[in-house]
Image (tube, rainbow, N blue to C red; front, side, top):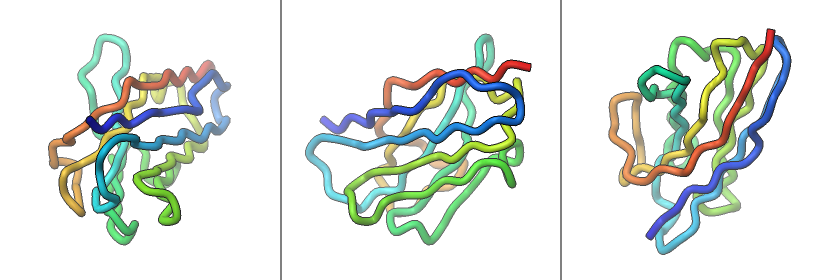
Length: 124
């Protein structure tokens, strides 16, 4: 069983920054796209960003473009990061790391594995 594990959530004021990390453990190779979703209280889970297995193809939700950066460590299997800058109160949510069964994944690709989530709170 593959299990993505997130870290790095927390509380920050508007305009601040946070960096989320995720490492997927379990029996899998490194040929997987990875990404991030988020779910705010009372809202549906939404796509945030995805990155292909070698990092050459990246997708972002319009709401985070120019503020968030997804990256991966090609020296570490299935490890992905989300650098979040200029945070807004509407970015408050539980952020989930996902691993896809494909090499490349867009905003409409269904993830195969989900992490447990890490809370991000942005106060005004």
